[in-house]
Length: 212
Ligand SMILES: Cc1cc2nc3c(=O)[nH]c(=O)nc-3n(C[C@H](O)[C@H](O)[C@H](O)COP(=O)(O)O)c2cc1C
Image 1 (tube, rainbow, N blue to C red):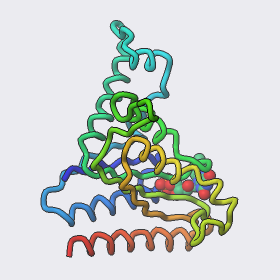
Image 2: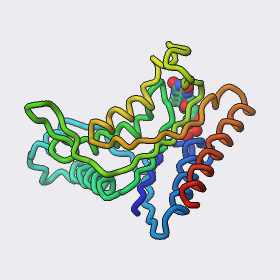
Image 3: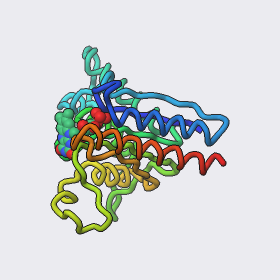
Image 4: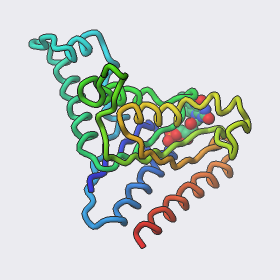
């Protein structure tokens, strides 16, 4: 089983989502004998914003003589290949300004490619990426989840992080998307510790049950 672990938090050791992606990957290692893990750190290798040049190259424009553009295109191909190659994709996704960090959005901009990961048909768009499992490690400072859809309605309305990820991945064909969440991390140091510990316990139990 090939696992792709993607981290997007720039906070290294201090990152909550990185603790969770690492725990999920360790959990996956326990479930099968033959698990290989590729790690993509988007805070180290951050793809450039889509530019006019990059978009023109997607459309077949000549890139010769433009070494920087060729480097960006090669990185995009690498990201796409490792994504398509994975059986399980583990995504560390902090909430930034109600959405995702731009490092992660830049990754999505490279993997959401017409003709490669989705295509348009007369009946509408069709996702081309099937048979993969996605586990998202969501971290956020405030609390957005609730037991009922209408509880704290305004907070739900401000969640453009988990919902966005589920929808954009679903658009590409990925419908097996699980979320492990640590939230309320900014409320107090104790709340942070408790929330991360709870998410870690969930991960442990989740994979113990599968491995058993
Ligand atoms: C630039 C920035 C923007 C943030 N925006 C939000 C936000 O809109 N809502 C929220 O609940 N938390 C927000 N937070 C808090 C983060 O989601 C929280 O610190 C989380 O732990 C970050 O993930 P990480 O620890 O893996 O880096 C923000 C943090 C930063 C640094």
